[in-house]
Length: 453
Image (tube, rainbow, N blue to C red; front, side):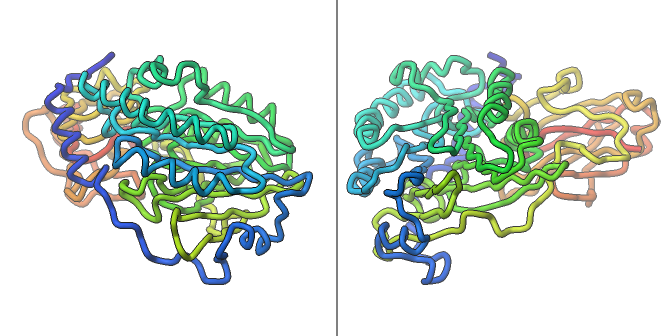
């Protein structure tokens, strides 16, 4: 396990900062009504009728989705049991119940954090607290669960904490229900599918998807489009969905809110991205606790129904497609005609890294307190005149970026050009003269660097 020079004390400090920022702070349930009253129904049966959906028809079924149940936050009996009480009377019951990661809290309390022995024991206890409720849920319908960033940690290749309680329970799934394929991937600690799972995911899309048909996929991190944090989801989606024409969905939790987005892949494919809120009322977020019922007929998604648990106003209906304009789904540094050289974190950056006070997330750094890199300008054959850094803010503090010709005298980069996650600036003449560009970053997440003409 690489520590990359990060001490346990720093990890604990970072965890404390994340907790103070509200990572697991209780939040009062939002009372706002989303959507107009015509899109609400007092009961689930009424919601079905408003959709024109008959769950009892031979070619129809429902799938129920929940995420971020976070055992370890609040009382165990207040998490799955209230949802079980609402699911049990459903007639018919869902074809399956998907739990899209973050089952617990303590396996990694914040991005990149490796648990100490106390947290390891706590994580196992949280998995055990969930198990009887998971088994009760599984008596209602098959449960398809996967893991999120709080269920495992960077370097835990064998998922030992989860496996110590749940044995060989699958965390990836590929199956078909009445003509609709479902593929659920394990986003793990950082949203980076390893080589084997990446191949598996692409292969399952090819195996199950029919051109023009519906395809439903899920992974904990709904980070499609991200170039910094959890950027592995973007590359996995690009690889898997290329050429897969039809109604393609990727469902995720992680952000603890309900939101739809849409992305276009070069070549014409469109991916609809649904974020779903947390299933634990003590978690930060919006409209939690809640779950979704997705309705299918004749191999097509005909509507989505959201239930805010215990909401006296009933159920909210959502369309089977995303109305928002599609955003381009690009890879880091894609379509940069001015790019002379690039390197991504986790993909060849090690020779250039000098100082690290940050949390390691396999292909990006986060909770950066101080992160120094040194790049010989000969990498771009001496032609580089500008530099671009892929970085994002992680707190209310301003993101810091400084430059030096000798890694001793540092000068803040004032007013860099910012375009999304790209921060671009002119390389100082002193660096060009020395042939070396040193960068120092603070209070940010970072995933890549480029030299430009």
